[in-house]
Each structure stands twice: as structure tokens, then as C-alpha cells.
Image (cartoon, rainbow, N blue to C red; front, side, top):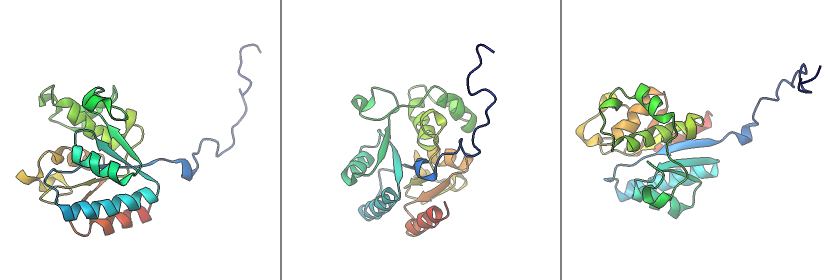
Length: 195
């Protein structure tokens, strides 16, 4: 019959659709409150080096210059997400995709009340956790807040802007690790040993 593709009717091998485990990208999201202390930064650097050695790529937002400096100083694999394409002179990998606003509105009940000038920064949080075009989710979120929360039910005034990204992570069932807690590196090691 004319017009049929040559593969029509042929059954692909059972594992043809599978991606070999060595090719599955591993991402984690990282956000920090500016009040992070030097001793926590050093602990964080150790965690980042360890995750890099295990094949993870860190996702960060270009709005946090301190985090950009730490990441670039370490030379770890990194994706930098821009709130909008010309932010920071376009020094990043990509900005939130078209569908990110719809997904964020589903996750964040307050999204419609957020001023339009602030929305790109909120969309960046969703992109940190769900990836470009919402297709390559981070495996977990590492953050730092002065109150050490990992769930928004424990939010205080000290949580600050990081509450948004923690709320999104909680709603999409990602583990949240707060570097304020001294046992966080051990918890992260336990998590990746089970992956």
C-alpha cells in the first residue's frame, strides 16, 4: 500500500522506549536566603561537590548573585534560569516556558494576586523544580532559610521569599532539604543512595 511508513506493523523491541539509566539527567534545585552564614556556605559547597561527582546538575535562578558566584566558583554542572530572557544581560540557560504560568497557577492558589512585574520570578521557582518546558523535574530542593523549614505549614516571618519555592516543592511532592539544619548533608546522602 502506498503511503504507509516502512515501520508500520513492526513491533519495536520491548526496551526500545527506555532510556539507559546513565543517560537520565539528574537535577536538583537550589535556592538560598541572602542571610546564609559562611559556615553554612562551606557545608553547602561540600554537598554541591558531592552531588556533582554523582552526576547531578544544579538548577539556580539568575536573580541570586551570591548563588551564581558560589556555583561558578565551584565549577559544578549548572543550569541558570532567567526570570525573563534579557535578565542579567541574558547570562543564563533559559527562562520559564509558555506552559509554566498555567502550571504555576494550578500549584499556587495566590498566583492571580501576584503583581505582573513579580510573576516572572515566581515562574522561575516552578521552572527550578520542574525544568525546561516542565519535563525534567528536579529530584529534590536544597534551600536555606533562617528558620530551617522544609514544609510551608511551618512557615514563619523569617522564611521570606523562599516560602514560595518550598510551597511548590511540597505540592509536587519533592523532598526539601534546608541547609540551616546541620544533618542536611546526611539526609541528602540517604536520599541519593535510594535513587
